[in-house]
Length: 326
Ligand code: TXA
Ligand code: MG
Image 1: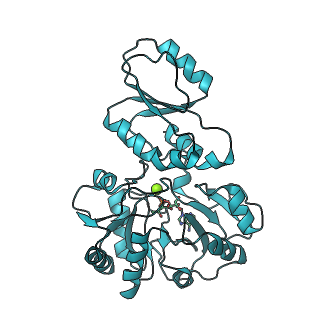
Image 2: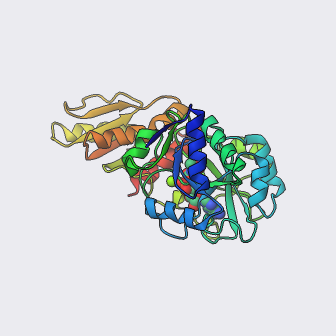
């Protein structure tokens, strides 16, 4: 059920549904979220059931502002404070120690909680409405079935879960890949998931280097090797490999799509070609949409030219390598 994100009555209705313990999908600037009130274990259980998400994988709790974060955090360490100041509202999630007894199911029983204040005006309006009803956080994973490509439009959400799920439509997500996640719960900040904010920008705001995840880092399904998978088999290749593979392929009647910045020469007729944007923000914005579109076209293989090496491509490179791993 589509609810118009520009309609105040629709936001009110969505807020009422959330307060009543129902699920509502909503837009954020990164991807669409599948929301439920974070303080209700039974409401949150509906998210796990609908997504097919295995138990034990914690959800991000979305808050309207910094004060909302204080309701769920046991404490906000100085480094998290600096990141919140620099990037909220925006595409950054911090993981901090959780207030005991609150949002147990959303946190999947962990002692920590992931918190994010989204910048999308429709998400913000929904969070404010919910807060007026006494609900100070909305737990929301990306609005896709577990392991699949995230949804960046209301139509994608309907593709995933059907038309009966209420979806606030706020247009196409501006950023297109999920938030960067920084674990601030263990003394040294760890970048659990890259996003469009570059490591450099996050480190500058944090005032210290970000560690890479290791064995001791918390579990995060968005960081599983295989995730964000389209139906088609996806492979990431260097420019040279792509050229060679296309030559070898010749006129084979494979259902093949090529997604590349360069224009490959000698592409056999029947091969679907999509041009990857030269700018990383633009590539992130359309990535999941393109993967869904190629699935709809029924291709069996997607050959992707590897993005350039710069750190501004980390988020896109990360999603592509996970999509390729399944
Ligand atoms: O941009 C985003 O972050 C989107 C929008 C909807 O806000 N949300 C999103 O949620 O990507 P999800 O559930 O698809 O990914 C959340 C990631 C998961 O990898 C989860 O394991 C990790 O955050 N996470 C959440 N809470 C955590 C915690 N307490 N400790 C470690 N990882 C956590
Ligand atoms: Mg996800």
